[in-house]
Image (cartoon, rainbow over the protein chains, first blue to last red):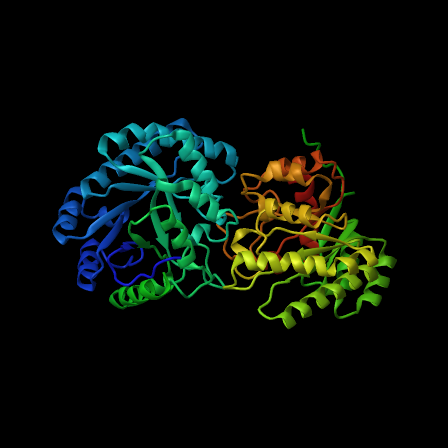
Length: 274
Length: 274
């Protein structure tokens, strides 16, 4: 039986959810709204640099939950694969600089590259950057992406695959992110969440709209779609997970809203539909 | 090693691929282009009635490969579920009337209904109409649909699920349809095709466009996307499948073309990229 959410203490919002705000506006907006957690996307750090962004975040008192995103390991040439690994090492350094204990990996895919090959390159890439992550004390989370992103965003499309990778890598620094948007349809979801156990490093929520008008930027507000979020949250919490619940919504519709009103809407949806 | 396709003898086109044509135009277009097979969608039969459509198809000499589509079994009320079963029995009768040995099932889903419940209602629905199918000597094929359709089109989203259903039902009249568009991303695809074996009743091809501009109506021409169709065809044929290869493309782009030119384009893509 999933316990109800009665306060905002575990709420975290992704800076991409309120994309029109820069980092300063985001910090001001979340703190004044009483949102305690923030996951920072690299594009929101970039105008400031990681050191300055880290100062701003520490001063804010916000809990920095993770950095999004590393990954995109597969590439046609060895040089491009090495460049991708270097970029992941920079992401790990940025995470350390802003006080994020975790980098979420959108693992990557190359249109037309055999998926089995892309999956191997992902494994190799994670193992190559793992020493850097361990040295920086930053964890890495493999986030399976919805199969509709298998062409160019991630060849890791089920939690079963991500769990198998974590098992094969065998490091306490590598785990998974469970995002209801990507996984809700999966007939193996409950058992794979159970199998993931304490390697669930983070948990993302939003909802699936019917109809979905755009593959990338039409995610729904919690409660306005078909995903039974409390049920999935219950499965995740049955593993012992008590971490933040992160609201990650890419939506051109919501980005057009007044972002303060959007944050208020998120708080209401979080309390009623998560 | 997959053998090359060197002629059009196994080519079949879905009437929905050339949606702007009515059934008479479709028959004329396919026969004059040397396309030997046709899969008929119910909306293309409806203006004529199944008896008249059957006469037209028999006179044409085209091979009628299947009727699309039955399914959509789950519903909130028992009355609606019974109505869905009646509609499937009508689809089976139409298939028999036009000489189609197979009805393809798009199994259905109801936004917000628990997927496990929808899946059970699908099983129950198939078993309920199975005696009618057997009596009419019409087979039923469960077509797993891409997970992006799990909200409102099908709660059966992997070949593994479809295979499990076929196994549970245990009738030679129930098998699966493998459509590369729905299944190409699946890490279990090769082994599940192998497991399906001679319960693969039909095989659909098109391609996955990057970017995909619309969830429903932006399927790509074979060879213009990221799917390795010959590889998947090889897996299917390794099971002993020698049946028609069906081109099913929903594309507002192609529907805007001159449909004769589209059929010629399909023939070239079929010979070069399937």
